[in-house]
Length: 197
Picture (cartoon, rainbow, N blue to C red):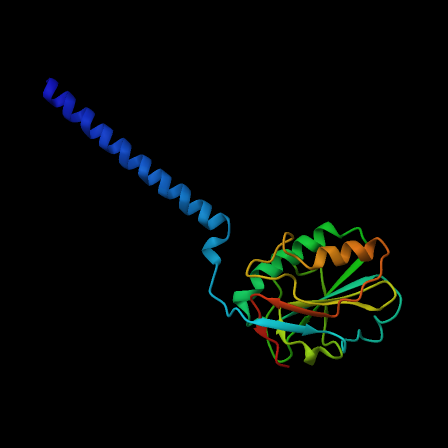
C-alpha cells in the first residue's frame, strides 16, 4: 500500500511540475500576443524624407476653420497600417472635444475600407492637391485654424506607432493651445509603403 501511495505522490508531483511549466508557457504566450509582439513583421529600415510643401486642402476646406488632420493610407499596406490605425483611433478619442476634424485619403486606384473602429469618425476625401509628392504611407498632414499647413509626415519613427514616439501629439497640443508651427518636412525611419501616385 505504501508503495502505491508513494507512486501516486511521485506522479502527482510530476504532474504538478508539468502543469506549472505549461502554465508558465501559456502566460508567456499570452503576454507576447497581448503586447503586440506577435504581430511584428520585418520591414525595410530605410530613411524616408517626407515633404509636404505642395499639399493643399480642397477649396471647400481651405482657409480659416477648425484644425484639420488628413490621414493618407493604402489598403494594400496591411503590414504598416495596423499600428497607425490604432494610434489614429487614440488621437480621435483624446482630441474629440478639441475642435479637430479628421479626414482620410485613400491611395488612388486602390480598394479597401478603413478599419471598422475608424469608420464614421473620419470624412473621406477623394484627393488632396500635391499628394503625389508624398513618398510613403501611412502618413498625415495637419492644417492649423488659419488653414496653414503645420505638419506633414509620418505618425512616428520606428516600427511601433504610439503616443510615446509620436510626432503628432506635440503638434496637435501646440495647435490647440494657439501656437503656430510649420513642420512640413521630416526624415524618419519606420514601417512605410510606397505611396507612388
